[in-house]
Length: 183
Image (cartoon, rainbow, N blue to C red):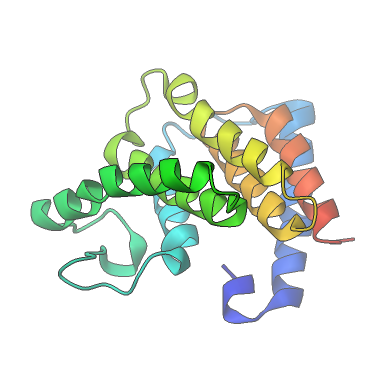
């Protein structure tokens, strides 16, 4: 999010700090069970995806500040109703060699899946892992676009933290920071 507002140095410092925390979690585990953090994860994931969405309008409703708090049922329904169109767009882009756009569309689909079911802890990692794995796999097919791959890896890392799977979260985040040259 710092990167989006032009604070590249602050973003790199925050990533280095997060990497150190993830390394400790991967090594020693969570020192205290903080209960279910899925609401926090969902809020951060929505905020991280806000820039890829069209400006809010009656056709493209968005929650205030990208959070799921305070959504009217109508806004939530309209946001989720975009899912079939995005799926169709992804299918159309899959065959025409427009991989960067496909990566971005699949991320928007993942955000909507998270809005729909992301606060339900039952089989959380099992249900959402395919979305994030696909995002990383697609981004890996873009060797000249390390920023997209870094974003996909950070998305999956953040998801894995929410799922309390710290070792692969650290691995993904370490690769992302290396791609972004955060030393």
